[in-house]
Length: 350
View 1 (tube, rainbow, N blue to C red):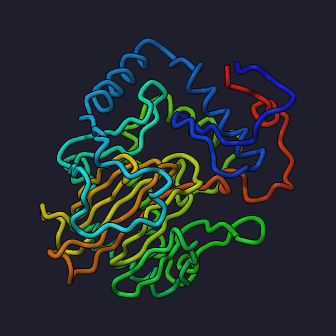
View 2 (view 1 turned 90 degrees about the vertical axis):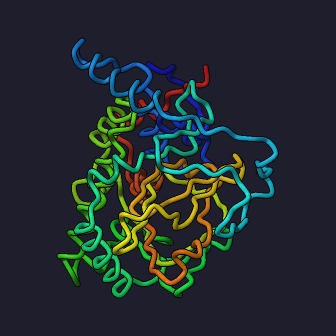
Protein backbone atom coordinates (compact mmCIF):
# COMPACT_ATOMS: atom_id res chain seq x y z
CA UNK A 1 0.00 0.00 0.00
CA UNK A 2 1.09 3.59 -0.49
CA UNK A 3 2.35 5.57 2.51
CA UNK A 4 -0.51 7.49 4.12
CA UNK A 5 0.25 11.14 4.89
CA UNK A 6 -1.75 13.99 6.43
CA UNK A 7 -1.01 16.47 3.66
CA UNK A 8 -0.41 15.94 -0.01
CA UNK A 9 -0.32 17.81 -3.31
CA UNK A 10 -3.67 17.65 -5.11
CA UNK A 11 -2.20 17.19 -8.56
CA UNK A 12 -3.35 14.11 -10.43
CA UNK A 13 -0.66 11.46 -10.77
CA UNK A 14 -2.86 9.48 -13.10
CA UNK A 15 -2.81 5.70 -13.80
CA UNK A 16 0.26 4.53 -15.72
CA UNK A 17 0.88 7.89 -17.39
CA UNK A 18 1.82 9.36 -13.97
CA UNK A 19 1.24 12.86 -15.27
CA UNK A 20 1.17 15.95 -13.11
CA UNK A 21 -2.07 17.77 -13.81
CA UNK A 22 -1.76 21.41 -14.84
CA UNK A 23 -4.61 22.32 -12.53
CA UNK A 24 -5.68 21.34 -9.04
CA UNK A 25 -8.31 18.67 -9.27
CA UNK A 26 -11.10 17.46 -7.02
CA UNK A 27 -10.23 15.23 -4.09
CA UNK A 28 -12.25 12.42 -5.66
CA UNK A 29 -10.27 12.62 -8.91
CA UNK A 30 -7.00 12.46 -6.96
CA UNK A 31 -8.28 9.52 -4.92
CA UNK A 32 -9.25 7.58 -8.05
CA UNK A 33 -5.93 8.33 -9.74
CA UNK A 34 -4.12 7.05 -6.65
CA UNK A 35 -6.28 3.94 -6.56
CA UNK A 36 -5.42 3.15 -10.18
CA UNK A 37 -1.73 3.67 -9.55
CA UNK A 38 -1.89 1.43 -6.49
CA UNK A 39 -3.72 -1.36 -8.30
CA UNK A 40 -1.24 -1.35 -11.17
CA UNK A 41 1.77 -1.26 -8.89
CA UNK A 42 0.79 -3.98 -6.43
CA UNK A 43 -2.12 -6.04 -7.76
CA UNK A 44 -1.05 -9.49 -9.03
CA UNK A 45 -3.00 -11.50 -11.56
CA UNK A 46 -5.37 -14.05 -10.01
CA UNK A 47 -3.66 -17.24 -11.12
CA UNK A 48 -0.75 -18.62 -13.10
CA UNK A 49 -2.84 -19.18 -16.24
CA UNK A 50 -4.02 -15.57 -16.13
CA UNK A 51 -0.45 -14.36 -15.65
CA UNK A 52 0.71 -16.31 -18.70
CA UNK A 53 -2.21 -15.09 -20.83
CA UNK A 54 -1.87 -11.43 -19.78
CA UNK A 55 1.91 -11.50 -20.01
CA UNK A 56 1.71 -12.89 -23.53
CA UNK A 57 -0.74 -10.19 -24.56
CA UNK A 58 1.36 -7.37 -23.12
CA UNK A 59 4.56 -8.72 -24.65
CA UNK A 60 3.16 -9.33 -28.12
CA UNK A 61 1.15 -6.15 -28.57
CA UNK A 62 3.00 -3.57 -26.49
CA UNK A 63 6.59 -4.70 -26.45
CA UNK A 64 6.31 -5.76 -30.08
CA UNK A 65 5.24 -2.29 -31.22
CA UNK A 66 7.69 -0.25 -33.28
CA UNK A 67 9.38 2.56 -31.38
CA UNK A 68 8.68 6.11 -32.55
CA UNK A 69 11.87 8.11 -32.17
CA UNK A 70 12.11 11.81 -31.33
CA UNK A 71 14.82 13.69 -33.20
CA UNK A 72 15.95 16.87 -31.47
CA UNK A 73 16.11 18.88 -34.69
CA UNK A 74 12.40 18.22 -35.31
CA UNK A 75 11.13 18.93 -31.78
CA UNK A 76 9.40 22.23 -31.07
CA UNK A 77 10.36 23.78 -27.69
CA UNK A 78 7.59 23.32 -25.13
CA UNK A 79 7.12 27.07 -24.58
CA UNK A 80 6.58 27.66 -28.31
CA UNK A 81 4.15 24.82 -29.01
CA UNK A 82 0.88 26.33 -27.76
CA UNK A 83 -1.27 27.50 -30.66
CA UNK A 84 0.92 26.12 -33.46
CA UNK A 85 -0.95 25.09 -36.60
CA UNK A 86 0.27 22.56 -39.14
CA UNK A 87 -0.45 22.32 -42.88
CA UNK A 88 -1.28 19.12 -44.72
CA UNK A 89 2.45 18.35 -45.07
CA UNK A 90 3.84 18.95 -41.55
CA UNK A 91 7.60 19.36 -41.21
CA UNK A 92 7.80 16.51 -38.70
CA UNK A 93 8.90 12.89 -38.85
CA UNK A 94 5.96 10.98 -40.31
CA UNK A 95 4.70 7.59 -39.16
CA UNK A 96 1.69 5.67 -40.47
CA UNK A 97 -0.73 3.09 -39.09
CA UNK A 98 0.75 0.22 -41.08
CA UNK A 99 2.17 -1.30 -37.90
CA UNK A 100 1.65 -0.92 -34.15
CA UNK A 101 3.93 1.87 -32.95
CA UNK A 102 4.45 3.72 -29.69
CA UNK A 103 6.31 6.81 -28.57
CA UNK A 104 7.51 6.36 -25.01
CA UNK A 105 7.94 9.40 -22.80
CA UNK A 106 8.98 7.15 -19.90
CA UNK A 107 8.97 3.50 -20.82
CA UNK A 108 9.71 2.26 -17.30
CA UNK A 109 6.60 3.99 -15.98
CA UNK A 110 4.49 3.20 -19.03
CA UNK A 111 4.17 6.86 -20.05
CA UNK A 112 3.46 7.26 -23.77
CA UNK A 113 2.55 10.24 -25.90
CA UNK A 114 0.97 8.20 -28.70
CA UNK A 115 0.14 4.60 -29.48
CA UNK A 116 -0.74 3.63 -33.05
CA UNK A 117 -3.31 0.87 -33.45
CA UNK A 118 -2.32 -1.09 -36.59
CA UNK A 119 -4.71 -0.62 -39.48
CA UNK A 120 -5.22 -4.34 -40.09
CA UNK A 121 -6.53 -4.72 -36.53
CA UNK A 122 -8.86 -1.75 -36.89
CA UNK A 123 -10.33 -3.10 -40.14
CA UNK A 124 -11.32 -6.30 -38.35
CA UNK A 125 -13.91 -4.22 -36.46
CA UNK A 126 -14.55 -1.27 -38.77
CA UNK A 127 -16.24 -1.88 -42.13
CA UNK A 128 -18.06 0.08 -44.82
CA UNK A 129 -21.50 -0.66 -43.39
CA UNK A 130 -20.86 0.50 -39.84
CA UNK A 131 -18.87 3.48 -41.15
CA UNK A 132 -21.89 4.52 -43.25
CA UNK A 133 -24.16 4.27 -40.21
CA UNK A 134 -21.74 6.23 -38.02
CA UNK A 135 -21.39 9.04 -40.57
CA UNK A 136 -25.20 9.33 -40.73
CA UNK A 137 -25.33 9.51 -36.93
CA UNK A 138 -22.55 12.12 -36.83
CA UNK A 139 -24.46 14.21 -39.35
CA UNK A 140 -27.50 14.06 -37.06
CA UNK A 141 -25.29 15.09 -34.16
CA UNK A 142 -24.24 18.15 -36.16
CA UNK A 143 -27.87 19.10 -36.76
CA UNK A 144 -29.09 18.63 -33.19
CA UNK A 145 -26.27 19.91 -30.96
CA UNK A 146 -25.00 23.41 -30.32
CA UNK A 147 -21.31 24.05 -30.82
CA UNK A 148 -19.00 23.66 -27.83
CA UNK A 149 -16.95 26.78 -27.17
CA UNK A 150 -13.28 26.10 -26.57
CA UNK A 151 -10.52 28.35 -25.26
CA UNK A 152 -8.54 30.43 -27.74
CA UNK A 153 -5.50 28.12 -27.60
CA UNK A 154 -7.64 25.05 -28.33
CA UNK A 155 -10.17 26.47 -30.78
CA UNK A 156 -9.90 24.77 -34.14
CA UNK A 157 -11.24 25.62 -37.58
CA UNK A 158 -13.72 23.71 -39.70
CA UNK A 159 -13.24 24.24 -43.41
CA UNK A 160 -16.99 23.67 -43.83
CA UNK A 161 -17.92 25.77 -40.78
CA UNK A 162 -19.20 22.71 -39.00
CA UNK A 163 -19.87 22.71 -35.28
CA UNK A 164 -17.57 21.28 -32.63
CA UNK A 165 -20.09 18.99 -30.95
CA UNK A 166 -20.11 16.77 -27.86
CA UNK A 167 -21.96 13.49 -27.53
CA UNK A 168 -22.41 11.79 -24.18
CA UNK A 169 -21.93 13.41 -20.79
CA UNK A 170 -21.00 17.06 -21.21
CA UNK A 171 -19.43 18.73 -18.19
CA UNK A 172 -21.73 21.49 -16.95
CA UNK A 173 -19.46 24.54 -17.14
CA UNK A 174 -20.29 27.05 -14.43
CA UNK A 175 -22.46 24.51 -12.63
CA UNK A 176 -22.27 21.01 -11.19
CA UNK A 177 -22.89 17.62 -12.69
CA UNK A 178 -23.41 16.93 -16.39
CA UNK A 179 -25.60 17.93 -19.31
CA UNK A 180 -26.76 15.13 -21.58
CA UNK A 181 -26.77 15.50 -25.35
CA UNK A 182 -29.95 16.36 -27.26
CA UNK A 183 -29.42 13.60 -29.80
CA UNK A 184 -30.43 10.90 -27.31
CA UNK A 185 -33.88 12.52 -27.04
CA UNK A 186 -34.40 13.69 -30.62
CA UNK A 187 -32.97 10.69 -32.46
CA UNK A 188 -32.49 7.64 -30.19
CA UNK A 189 -31.41 5.42 -33.11
CA UNK A 190 -28.52 7.72 -34.04
CA UNK A 191 -27.58 8.04 -30.38
CA UNK A 192 -27.54 4.25 -30.09
CA UNK A 193 -25.25 4.03 -33.11
CA UNK A 194 -22.74 6.45 -31.54
CA UNK A 195 -22.86 4.65 -28.19
CA UNK A 196 -22.05 1.37 -29.92
CA UNK A 197 -19.29 3.10 -31.87
CA UNK A 198 -17.72 4.33 -28.63
CA UNK A 199 -17.92 0.77 -27.28
CA UNK A 200 -16.27 -0.48 -30.47
CA UNK A 201 -13.42 2.03 -30.11
CA UNK A 202 -12.88 0.86 -26.53
CA UNK A 203 -12.83 -2.76 -27.66
CA UNK A 204 -10.27 -2.07 -30.41
CA UNK A 205 -7.90 -0.19 -28.12
CA UNK A 206 -8.29 -2.43 -25.04
CA UNK A 207 -6.48 -5.24 -26.85
CA UNK A 208 -3.35 -3.08 -26.86
CA UNK A 209 -3.49 -1.82 -23.28
CA UNK A 210 -1.56 -3.39 -20.41
CA UNK A 211 -3.70 -5.79 -18.39
CA UNK A 212 -2.77 -4.02 -15.17
CA UNK A 213 -4.11 -0.75 -16.59
CA UNK A 214 -7.41 -2.40 -17.45
CA UNK A 215 -7.60 -3.82 -13.91
CA UNK A 216 -6.97 -0.33 -12.56
CA UNK A 217 -9.78 1.15 -14.67
CA UNK A 218 -12.17 -1.61 -13.59
CA UNK A 219 -11.36 -1.16 -9.89
CA UNK A 220 -11.58 2.63 -10.09
CA UNK A 221 -14.94 2.73 -11.81
CA UNK A 222 -16.23 0.08 -9.43
CA UNK A 223 -15.31 2.18 -6.40
CA UNK A 224 -16.52 5.57 -7.62
CA UNK A 225 -18.25 5.19 -10.95
CA UNK A 226 -18.00 8.13 -13.35
CA UNK A 227 -20.66 8.42 -16.07
CA UNK A 228 -19.84 6.51 -19.24
CA UNK A 229 -21.30 6.43 -22.74
CA UNK A 230 -23.52 3.41 -23.38
CA UNK A 231 -21.84 0.29 -22.01
CA UNK A 232 -18.34 1.78 -22.15
CA UNK A 233 -15.90 1.03 -19.33
CA UNK A 234 -14.23 4.43 -19.29
CA UNK A 235 -15.27 6.70 -22.21
CA UNK A 236 -17.57 9.45 -20.93
CA UNK A 237 -17.99 11.59 -24.02
CA UNK A 238 -17.05 12.06 -27.65
CA UNK A 239 -16.05 15.29 -29.38
CA UNK A 240 -16.75 15.47 -33.10
CA UNK A 241 -16.49 17.87 -36.01
CA UNK A 242 -16.20 17.84 -39.80
CA UNK A 243 -13.26 19.03 -41.95
CA UNK A 244 -11.60 20.15 -38.73
CA UNK A 245 -8.06 21.17 -37.90
CA UNK A 246 -6.83 22.34 -34.51
CA UNK A 247 -3.82 24.17 -33.03
CA UNK A 248 -1.38 22.45 -30.68
CA UNK A 249 -2.67 22.37 -27.13
CA UNK A 250 -2.82 20.40 -23.89
CA UNK A 251 -5.95 18.90 -22.32
CA UNK A 252 -6.42 18.36 -18.60
CA UNK A 253 -8.13 15.02 -19.16
CA UNK A 254 -8.04 11.78 -17.19
CA UNK A 255 -6.64 8.63 -18.78
CA UNK A 256 -5.70 8.57 -22.47
CA UNK A 257 -7.89 9.68 -25.38
CA UNK A 258 -8.90 7.75 -28.51
CA UNK A 259 -8.86 9.54 -31.86
CA UNK A 260 -10.53 8.24 -35.02
CA UNK A 261 -11.65 9.64 -38.37
CA UNK A 262 -14.23 8.57 -40.94
CA UNK A 263 -14.71 9.37 -44.61
CA UNK A 264 -17.77 7.79 -46.19
CA UNK A 265 -16.96 5.43 -49.05
CA UNK A 266 -13.19 5.66 -48.56
CA UNK A 267 -12.41 2.96 -46.01
CA UNK A 268 -10.30 0.97 -48.46
CA UNK A 269 -8.16 3.97 -49.37
CA UNK A 270 -4.49 4.02 -48.37
CA UNK A 271 -4.17 7.77 -48.91
CA UNK A 272 -3.45 9.95 -45.87
CA UNK A 273 -6.36 12.20 -44.89
CA UNK A 274 -4.60 14.35 -42.28
CA UNK A 275 -2.00 14.14 -39.53
CA UNK A 276 -2.16 14.01 -35.77
CA UNK A 277 0.89 16.03 -34.78
CA UNK A 278 2.99 15.90 -31.61
CA UNK A 279 5.26 18.92 -32.13
CA UNK A 280 7.23 18.83 -28.87
CA UNK A 281 8.35 15.30 -29.76
CA UNK A 282 8.89 16.05 -33.45
CA UNK A 283 6.61 13.51 -35.10
CA UNK A 284 3.18 13.14 -36.68
CA UNK A 285 0.97 10.16 -37.47
CA UNK A 286 -0.63 10.00 -40.90
CA UNK A 287 -4.25 8.94 -40.59
CA UNK A 288 -6.24 7.15 -43.28
CA UNK A 289 -10.02 6.61 -43.28
CA UNK A 290 -11.04 4.55 -40.25
CA UNK A 291 -7.67 4.74 -38.47
CA UNK A 292 -7.49 4.76 -34.67
CA UNK A 293 -4.78 6.00 -32.31
CA UNK A 294 -4.42 6.43 -28.57
CA UNK A 295 -2.77 9.61 -27.31
CA UNK A 296 -1.77 11.25 -24.07
CA UNK A 297 -3.77 14.52 -23.79
CA UNK A 298 -1.13 15.93 -21.44
CA UNK A 299 1.38 16.35 -24.24
CA UNK A 300 0.98 18.91 -27.04
CA UNK A 301 -1.15 17.51 -29.84
CA UNK A 302 -3.02 18.92 -32.81
CA UNK A 303 -4.73 17.99 -36.06
CA UNK A 304 -3.28 19.20 -39.34
CA UNK A 305 -5.20 20.53 -42.30
CA UNK A 306 -6.63 17.95 -44.71
CA UNK A 307 -4.47 16.71 -47.56
CA UNK A 308 -5.32 17.76 -51.13
CA UNK A 309 -6.64 14.27 -51.88
CA UNK A 310 -9.53 14.90 -49.46
CA UNK A 311 -10.02 18.62 -49.97
CA UNK A 312 -13.52 18.08 -51.39
CA UNK A 313 -14.53 15.19 -49.09
CA UNK A 314 -16.23 15.45 -45.72
CA UNK A 315 -13.91 14.12 -43.04
CA UNK A 316 -15.51 13.34 -39.67
CA UNK A 317 -13.01 13.48 -36.80
CA UNK A 318 -13.92 12.11 -33.37
CA UNK A 319 -12.11 11.97 -30.03
CA UNK A 320 -13.32 9.74 -27.19
CA UNK A 321 -12.28 10.80 -23.70
CA UNK A 322 -12.90 11.05 -19.97
CA UNK A 323 -12.15 14.32 -18.19
CA UNK A 324 -10.96 14.78 -14.63
CA UNK A 325 -14.31 16.50 -14.05
CA UNK A 326 -16.11 13.29 -15.06
CA UNK A 327 -14.13 11.29 -12.52
CA UNK A 328 -14.71 13.94 -9.86
CA UNK A 329 -18.44 13.98 -10.77
CA UNK A 330 -18.04 17.74 -11.41
CA UNK A 331 -19.28 18.31 -7.89
CA UNK A 332 -16.84 18.94 -5.05
CA UNK A 333 -19.66 19.06 -2.51
CA UNK A 334 -20.13 15.27 -2.64
CA UNK A 335 -18.11 13.92 0.32
CA UNK A 336 -15.53 11.19 -0.14
CA UNK A 337 -16.33 7.72 1.11
CA UNK A 338 -14.04 6.26 3.77
CA UNK A 339 -12.26 4.16 1.13
CA UNK A 340 -11.86 7.13 -1.24
CA UNK A 341 -10.38 9.14 1.63
CA UNK A 342 -7.75 6.48 2.24
CA UNK A 343 -6.71 6.61 -1.40
CA UNK A 344 -6.77 10.39 -1.44
CA UNK A 345 -4.23 10.51 1.42
CA UNK A 346 -1.77 8.14 -0.24
CA UNK A 347 1.62 9.42 -1.32
CA UNK A 348 3.75 7.74 -3.99
CA UNK A 349 6.67 10.16 -4.09
CA UNK A 350 9.03 7.69 -2.43
